[in-house]
Length: 494
Ligand SMILES: [Ca+2]
Ligand SMILES: [Ca+2]
Ligand SMILES: [Ca+2]
Image 1: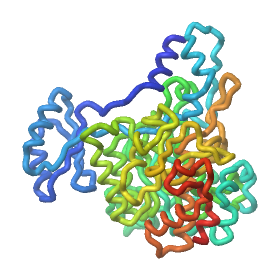
Image 2: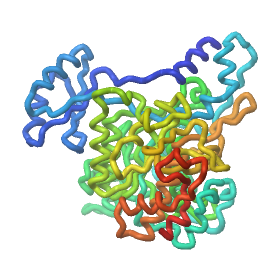
Image 3: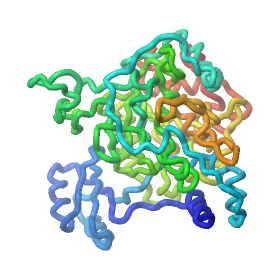
Image 4: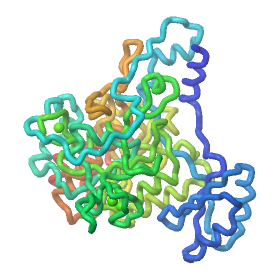
């Protein structure tokens, strides 16, 4: 058992997950007949799906031995512009877990047969999708756990609220592992698709009539979409405490991120997000294992942009694209470019080391994607602690990482109506919510506040307001483009 455990842990630390077998992304030319030519060219049983951005299509071939031959044949066709693998994407490993000394000791000394107390992770390990509530129970008054959110003071969020606490017209897409949409402090701030609300011509509830009332390609998508299982319940399914420690996986990542964007303020419950009155669109493309594919990320980006989100919060990255790979993930780049062309802001976690390891990583020389892409609508976010120091795990980059924000031991909403700054405790040690993943929602929330106050500004102006108003610090000078940390109050006056 112990040897197995160490093998699992080693896998967690050092696995560099490659693309799936015969699963490709094919970019066709603009000719509308090309999709039919593509289908006709493919072997029997191949599945083609239009991803809706830049003529990219996903092609899956059941027999993996046919893949390479198919690809070579396709590359010779005039209607095929480009081909690539459907790279896997994923959560960045939790650095507090990877760096844990007790775990390191266990790896170094697998013979150590001291008992290994595996705790359960309350509120996690959920494996079913609850129904979507139409609304919460309301409530008013101060948010009792707000004082646990040290990042709110550090980023001067309360002063920013003197201007606005956000508009319900502003929607932030949390593109992640899903959201606990039943959470008492999130349910009242969920984006509700107006096209799937109300009654249809037959008097049925559009939310549950099984019809794509707004014809956006998704049936009964009332609060977002689950691109992993292709349904309308993007719940934040998570793995057990044992799995988190041994094989990794999702501990409720999307729910934690959503809370710092827009947990409901002044409802007498829990906490408050940076923008306590804006809306959260839940787009799940990472599974309970913490992994997803480029194709599903592209569909999530497209959904966000098409359905009214102005800010895309992206606490994930590439685990399959080596920066030195000549081929690269052009399909994902095209999706980010699409988000820019459609006027949205793409806030992205700078990354926890190169592909989740090798900390103290300079993204200028060792990029992490998508944060390091050159598209101008990206804000790449590093993680800082309560003292303003760069998290030991956080990527930085004088030219490629834009700003620091709270990302060490961050308190937020967790799955099952809970709140925490701790993922799990074992060996008497806390694995806290650490990561550039946690920093990113603070900046996404700040962007939402600013856009609420100045709805006619462009993404470029919003980004400038955030970066030009930072509190400059010695710790971030020379390590980030702006040389400082998020200051929401100064931002509102910028
Ligand atoms: Ca629909
Ligand atoms: Ca419907
Ligand atoms: Ca609250």
